[in-house]
Length: 211
Ligand code: GAR
Image 1 (cartoon, rainbow, N blue to C red):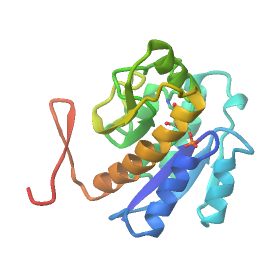
Image 2 (image 1 turned 45 degrees about the vertical axis):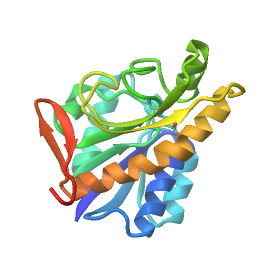
Image 3 (image 1 turned 90 degrees about the vertical axis):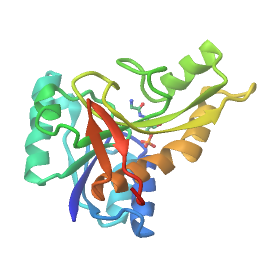
Image 4 (image 1 turned 90 degrees about the horizontal axis):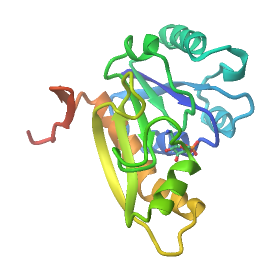
């Protein structure tokens, strides 16, 4: 069984999708063993406690810079013996001390179709504001491995969602979560835990069950 450590900062609906998926027996070969939050009082912590998952708070605001913060996160990940780290609405970019220690072992869910509307400054509702500002007709979600560059690691899964004429950032965000994020994040986590993601030339490929 792989130890899955989930990093959160906010509401935790993606964490909830992982917990529900685990409860349905859909995360094969792994178990959520710890939830780490960058914010005290994040609602995601309540969701973890309700599911009897141990929680740790490492407040971002108590660290002077990203490097010092990342070192604290790294120490905790090592303590937890993490096999897979999942960024589920985690709003801090991790320094290379973490990404280099866990290559192809950290995955992130991003609420757009990478390489659109991604990179530094594109997070949460801002992503959907930018997509609507641009006028795209399709957006969606991406699950990818995390490397040294923001939102630039190998893509594991993507799912498209149509944009409606009357969408607001909030309605688009909600629909992308429901139709895309909450489905592809647990799916990618299970694929990882089942050793069904292959890396070739820096790209990720899902190994089909009948391959
Ligand atoms: C989700 O839409 C997630 O994709 C996004 O923040 C939201 C968190 O919601 N993450 C990013 O923008 C990271 N770049 P949640 O806390 O309810 O899961």
